[in-house]
Image (tube, rainbow, N blue to C red):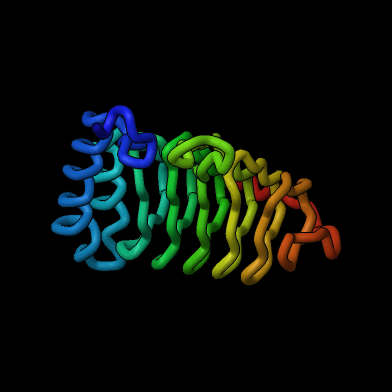
Length: 184
């Protein structure tokens, strides 16, 4: 019956669901309760599940990473408490990028024109020195240019140009940002 009814079909393979269950248990028992300064410990756990993290990444204990194996971070990336990275597809975060509290990086949606609303996902790329401010939302398939800022509570439905500040729903460019490249 489940195979013939599109509303009852699983969106992910049994292997994927099993791996997420093991990750969920690891998150609950080892990641979430870890003290705030234990960034190296949390990076170790994420890498154990396939995340590719550069040096000095700071992933805070209350950040939610849906699929570590689909997370790629360059060096010095910050993912704050309460940030959610829902990544059925690859999410790539450039060096020195910041994902603030309660920001939502959403890598999937549902195809409204198919029976059972088939899940569709697409990769997201966040450039170097970009900042997703608190409670901002980034839709699947978006490219955030280097140095772009998505303001408080803004929703990005299109690519964000480099070194530009965006605000609103949907996000609109409000001004440019001074370019820099701190190679120290």
